[in-house]
Picture (tube, rainbow, N blue to C red):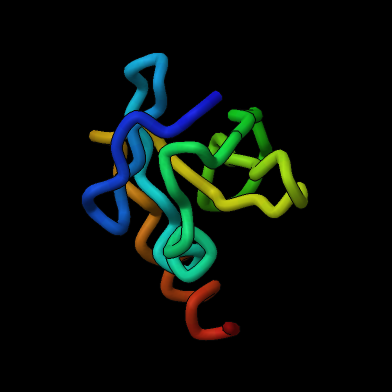
Length: 83
């Protein structure tokens, strides 16, 4: 699946119209994403996220939530502190 829009660093819209918030600790991975970047959306079971976007070229993944859902603040802070 290709990227339709990635104008805000923390939001990505896919060609199917779905919009996803990128986990704050994973933003550095998405900096180089372009419209031709091929991604897969997968379901995951993570303490902060329900889904991940996986870049097909190298299987690098970022945790995402649908736009409108909220990150669990306590867990996010703990993960960001740990680095």
